[in-house]
Length: 378
Ligand code: HEC
Ligand code: HEC
Ligand code: HEC
Ligand code: HEC
Ligand code: HEC
Image (tube, rainbow, N blue to C red; front, top):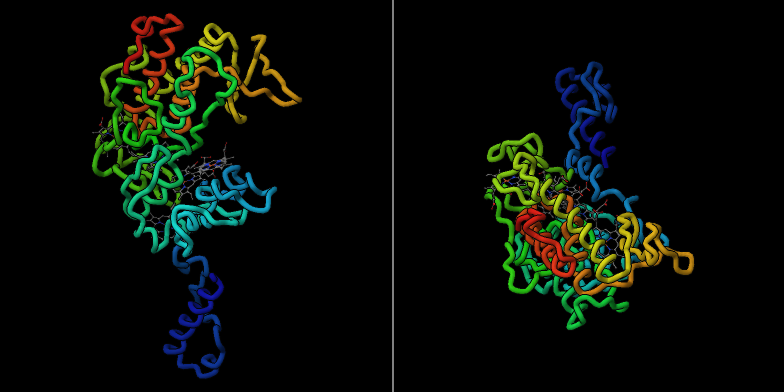
């Protein structure tokens, strides 16, 4: 491709030269270089060069990442996974390849990434709404249909409610398994209570979509769509901080530290850490079945029956935690949902803080923790 462009350019440059020199001998030599410069191929503009370079260096093009290489040992990507793990699967899901919309008919080849045609596709503008795991149909416009499809996670608070049903709240039940919201769940965070991704406790109200402010009200108004990076300068129109992580508007301290100079991200992280401690304390003291969290391997929560700090083994493999109660499961789910989004503080800080607070409050009942003494706020 670039080769063809170079030749065309060379031709037109040599053509110009002929007109000046009027040398008939030179005119018969196709693509001859002019006698004097400048002729630096690297200066010749190749269309889309910058977009391609930016995209190529981004996570979306990283074919070696686990998000794309997970299926390499298999013949194809399962239909349920392909929508978000390959451009081909995405087009199949939305019917952009001429197949039925709403399902992946497959088989989908391994080796795909989030390619150009995932976002640059005439059919994308025909997609008027994207379905979320909660059942919500959220109206979308243009390229947001793509971000919203893949960054919505795979579960909803409803998934948790259905699993725990009417089971006794504090009795461990081996039928209960950890419910993983999946990864990079930015769109789920962003839609907040309206998106229904978190487990919502009875009689509590939850903040909806984070409308933020007009210039930063869509995914690509903050994320450059090819590098995926967030430029910080535009934030400074409205915020005073040294980095996105340090941005704070609210004057109240949510984590009980009383420090309102640090970014809101620090409050969210502190409360997530407190919640994790409470989930573990509950496993020890109420469920009487200690657990160990290991963020590097699925399903993240493992059994440690004798409480010696070492993960138990079952048939030579780490033993998954199987002593969930409805109360610990919903708290751990909310914890994982909040921490599954590294941009949570910019995507929807109120919703994050609410889910963390309510989960802590729920665990505080059997633990006998004094929420007021803990100093955390909702
Ligand atoms: C709704 C979209 C969606 C669906 C459906 C989906 N994933 Fe993902 N998955 C993602 C996104 C987005 C990431 C990227 C997270 C990151 O690494 O930033 C991801 C990441 C992963 C990773 C890498 C995790 C890591 O620790 O780096 C694995 C493995 C994975 N998914 C497996 C699966 C499997 C298996 C299925 C089907 C059973 C599946 N996914 C279905 C969106 C999805
Ligand atoms: C994740 C979605 C996504 C992917 C993948 C993607 N683009 Fe884009 N691209 C966009 C969006 C959104 C815009 C519009 C940017 C704007 O309006 O500011 C855009 C704009 C462009 C432009 C116009 C110039 C610009 O930067 O605004 C070109 C050219 C382009 N893309 C080429 C490509 C090529 C080539 C690829 C693959 C190598 C690619 N894009 C992959 C979303 C994507
Ligand atoms: C077909 C599914 C798909 C679409 C469409 C998609 N993404 Fe992604 N996105 C992913 C996966 C998978 C990863 C993780 C890739 C990896 O681990 O290398 C990811 C990673 C990211 C990251 C993390 C970058 C990093 O450095 O870790 C950001 C930010 C992101 N996407 C934003 C967007 C935005 C904004 C859009 C819409 C313009 C979009 N994505 C559209 C699947 C998608
Ligand atoms: C107000 C600006 C803003 C908006 C709007 C926004 N983001 Fe983000 N996003 C951020 C910031 C800041 C981060 C954290 C810094 C970073 O990772 O670049 C982030 C992080 C992310 C990450 C994790 C990147 C990583 O490092 O793993 C993903 C994925 C993501 N955003 C996707 C999206 C999607 C999809 C949307 C639309 C639903 C969206 N974002 C809307 C500012 C924004
Ligand atoms: C046009 C003005 C404007 C711009 C630009 C802007 N913001 Fe904001 N930001 C606000 C407003 C207003 C709020 C309060 C919104 C609310 O609580 O509903 C806010 C709230 C926040 C919060 C939560 C602070 C807290 O204490 O709860 C974060 C984090 C944040 N913005 C990050 C960003 C980032 C990152 C950028 C740049 C990518 C950005 N903002 C750009 C106006 C802006």
